[in-house]
Every structure is written in structure tokens, then in C-alpha cells.
Length: 476
Image (cartoon, rainbow, N blue to C red; front, side, top):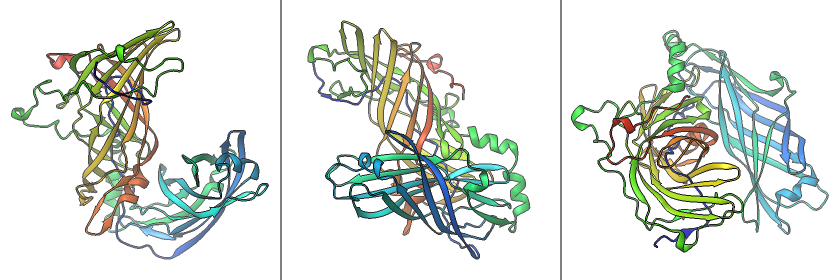
């Protein structure tokens, strides 16, 4: 049988859509604030190490504007974060024998205004390449970087606070970086976490803007709001159901990296021709930083089917039965609008460029479990901020394919469909900008990051397909 196997990279069938809600709460623009205020704050963090959680002091020093104006952008200035890690944990972060190392920090900053809250990310606060400290010495680090610009739509104090901090270390000679996740000590009061407060005054149209942006129904639309650009297509342009499911070549390699412990990869004789068909997968993709979600492959619009090559490999052992299938998803671009409390509404179109997914179902003494894994690149276009176009250019995309992993329980079967759930990390963005403007840091700071949930319902495999084969959206 055909089918070379790439080791280690698992997946189970059906739908997965990426996070296609590209919405931006803080958008870069031209402009400046008035006088500056110096910030100096030491915050106690709890950082996770292999030996357990440790208290670590982080000193923040930076510059924030004193005041701003609704409808006009302002930005924090340079920020410095100083961190000292105890010498007894340095060994687990730096490869044995390493002489130098580099380090970066990602700071999540909760931002609040008028009772609402969101978060901004200061990506890649960088520390200079440094020598590995001698045995018995603490690991002292100084990170520097600049924060994202924001445009508040209404009047009211905007408060920036210290939030989660992730430290990444890359020692020379190490195959991969090491990572430490830290969070502010839970006993700290709100005022002990405050970095700065910026007074935002009304602006010319502040009254009308505040009325419009703070309405509860608008906030609800921002959380769930998503438009499918094909949903309102004229009747004569409606896509026939499953008329052209994407092809899956039988030679497409599969990824077995998510197989449970003790289950081997299939042998050459375990590969079969498989059975082909189409399926529909519909659901929600969250953007955690925007506290909202987008509908992917809207069933009320003009959803697209994906292709299934079921039973591409089947193998068993004394205590398991495994089946691997391939799925090629084909989602239409999703157009979504999000709000960040009082900030300007942002609308963007996100397209998904997905590789075939490997779907693996394993039945053993623990029950039946399906894993779906694939990689997809996100493309962003047609961005508008408060109705004004923001030219991100024709090549705005995620810097690498997004690793998408979904799981299904005993209620899910490849041929019958069912619910699939997962969580993804949105990669940084690249190629976003035009006319000399670089919006990569902006999109990365306001969208990229971990913890973005995906929930899908996959319909039964069909050939031919009708409207009855399109599942309903999962609860969200």
C-alpha cells in the first residue's frame, strides 16, 4: 500500500478550524499623548519550576502618558523588567555546558476602563545575550521593550496592571528553549498590581461615541459577533452541497505523534485504500485576548464541506484497536467584529490555509478516544478600525502554521461525526503592513497567545450530501 508515514504528529478526524477571529482591541496609529509619568513597581510573582512554585520579585520601570483623549491613540513608552531567579533553578533552564544564553519575556497587561477589562501583550521583551552565571550565583535578567498603542473610544481612566509573565531561555547548544510561567502572587491587592493610570478625557464626539460603544447589546455582539462573507451571497451564487469536496491524495503522509503510550505506529501492511466521502464541520473559535469568538463555517450561511478518507490505516494489538483517517478541511473566510470594552470596534477577514488532518481513534481498556491534529496558516485582510480601513497589505499571515489539536470522546466516530474540542496558541504575525508601516507587532500583541478554545460539531460523512447533513452549532 502507498503512504509513507511521518512519525509523531497525531490527529483525529473532522473539523477543526482555526482561530479565525482576528480582531484587534488595540490598534496602532499616529499621535502622541501629553506629559509622561514614570512608573516604578515591584511585584511578587509565583513562578513554576520542576521542584515546585517559587516566589520571585519582578521590578517594572517604564514611562506612561499622564493623560489621553478619547478617539486619539496613545502608547506606553519603554518598559524595563528586572528579574532575579534563585541559583538552584538556573540549572533546569540552561543546558549543561552552555556558556551563553539569550532570553525573552512576554508580559500580559490587564487593561481596564469604566468597569470593563481586556488585556494587551507586550511581546518579546528582550534581554541581551549573556554569560551563564557561575555555579551558586543567581540568574539576574533585565528585559526591555515597548508596549502597544491603544485608542480609547470613550472618556474614563484607563488602568494598566501587571499580569502573567512568561520567560523563555535559549542556551547555546540547546535543541529547544526552556520556559518558565509566572503569575502575580494571588494575595496581592489590585492597587499592588497597578502599573499606571492614564486619564482619558472626552474628545470631540465623546458623548455620542460613549453612548454607542457602551451599550450592553453591542458588547454581546462583540462576544459572539461574527460574519461569514458568504452568508449573504446571492441565491445564484450559493455553493452546491458537497459538489466539490477537496481532494486527498492516497499518498498523503499521516502523523502518529499523538498515539497513546504503548500503541505503536501501523506497519506497512496495516494501510488500506480507505473509504471517501464529505462532511461538514461548524463551530466557534475564541480569541481570548478579545474576550470574544467567531463562527467558523456558519451553518446558517453557505458552509463548505471537507473531504474524508476514512480507515486509511487499521491496526490492533493485545489491548487496543486503532484506526487512522485523513481529513481535508475547507472553511470559507470568516469576517468578524469585536469590541474591547470602550475601544474602537475592529473588523477583519481571516482565511484558513490548512494541511490535511490526521484523525486517530484508539479503543482500549480506558474507552474510546479520538485525536485530530493538523496545521493551518491564518491570513488576515480587509481590516477596518471604527469603519476606517487599515491597510495590512496582501501578505498578512501567521509567522508559522498554527498547531491545531482537537479531541473527541466516546460519542465521536469518524463516519458518524460528533463534538470535537480543543485549545490552540495563535502564533505571532508577519507581513502585515504597507507604505512603510509595520503592523506585525500590533497584531501579535493584541491577538497572538495561548488559551484560545475551539468547539466544533462534525456531521456524518455523506455522499451525496444535503442540508440535513449540516450540523448545528455547539453551545458556546
